[in-house]
Image (cartoon, rainbow, N blue to C red; front, side, top):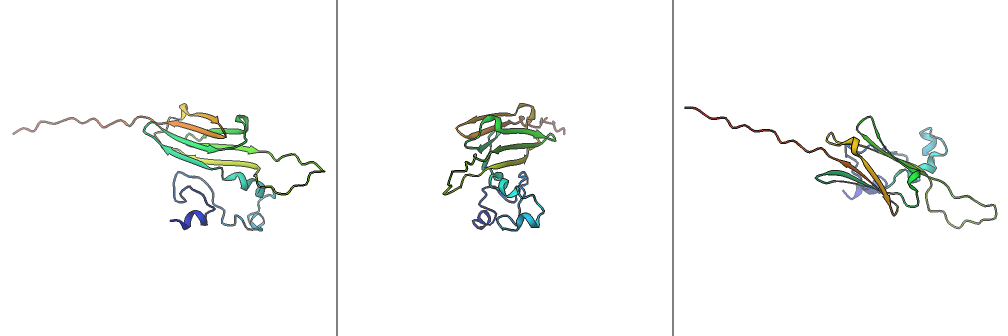
Length: 159
């Protein structure tokens, strides 16, 4: 199993997870990938941020998503529920203004857009979704409906 994350770009998410709607680009990282896929030249910019790191855990009460978005303000991130069952988290980090006299030695921080989508289970209470951001971590909480236990009725056996 250790080969799968390194082969698929060091993602922690399970490639075979039916709830994850991430799109895997087999040409990601190749210099000709955007030419082959007919993507705009800006697509290379956005792919650096496209894989915003997300943890998804399920507790007895809710599904909790934690997203690393360091340096972003609350206004730069959107949380939406689409088609009644898809949680969509998106945002954009703008490039730093370049001055003509500046000499850059290294640029490692990514900029551009990110978009992550997750299919929520049927027991999600979509009208009660809450989001909060603290110290560069966005936490989205999706409460779950209580699972109703089937009513069991004992039947007397005659005879």
